Length: 269
Image (cartoon, rainbow, N blue to C red; front, side, top):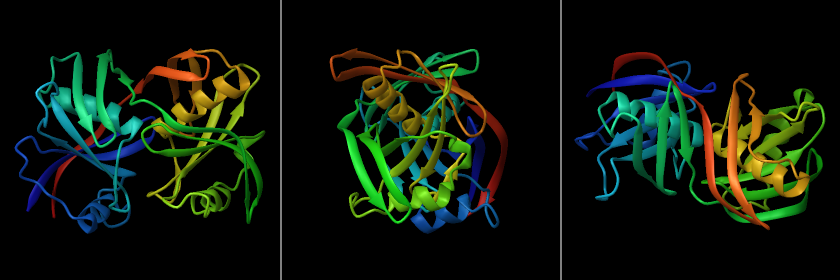
């Protein structure tokens, strides 16, 4: 089967995008992993299907798969790329797209190549926790911003052995389903530098939208960093996270940043 695809990235977090509005394409986890392989496939952190809407109040459905072929509820950077790709495919009104993910319904707004995603509600927040791993002891915060995230605030995050330390957290028995691990450094200028070890990619990604959202919420709740928060990801781009806070209750979360086409092509699956 020959499939047309578009390679996109959001702040360096890259994806294989496939238009499947007629619902005819079904991929196995092995096929997804092969397409995402950086040596023998197209190469990406994940694969996204633009599927037809499942509800009357949505324009489309976003199916997201990590590079290992596993299906995941949602991806923040992927959602921005999905929005751009959907608009390019004629979905929505050209300025906004409403779509369904495995984490719930989402809406996005496009303006001059910058995309603002209204994120799904955060839940399962646990602040001020401590985790002992083979790499040391970590004070951490945990929450689900569409997928599970650990946030560790550190100094000099550029010096972290991200694979060793991130995988020690990701595979810890404390998280039976696994988790993503984010290391965050609050800089003097107020910008938060973030590095993320991503579950399913099993390495560092250049950006993680749900991860920076978790970092922003943790920084606001525990460090009183005011909204909107500015996050610099490993790829060098800046992402903005905003939300409303009432005590410890967080609502109306938005993630803003770029989404860009890299190239298009066809591949045999």
